[in-house]
Image 1: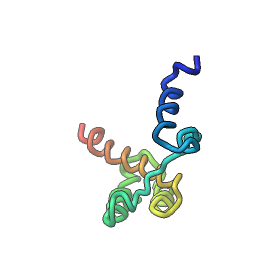
Image 2 (image 1 turned 90 degrees about the vertical axis):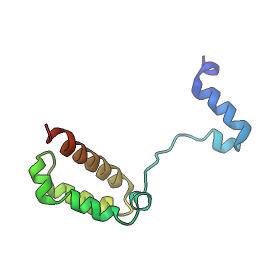
Image 3 (image 1 turned 180 degrees about the vertical axis):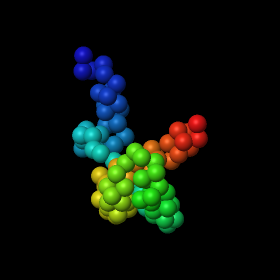
Length: 101
């Protein structure tokens, strides 16, 4: 059944337009470089949004761990950037939708 799967067909199609080694390479993780993507004010926005007091008030996360994530997630560590973004988006969502109800 391999010849009829979408992934197989897409790889076959990709071989027409890309070098074979690119078309057939294994999947790789992609992490968004937060500071570069969101610009210079992003670090300040994150620090203002995820202050220890506000994180404590929200009650979802450990403020000390979030501060560690802020420090490392705004740096070159890609896995921490992903975790920081998840915490930031959840916090913004909860403050907009959970707290307002």
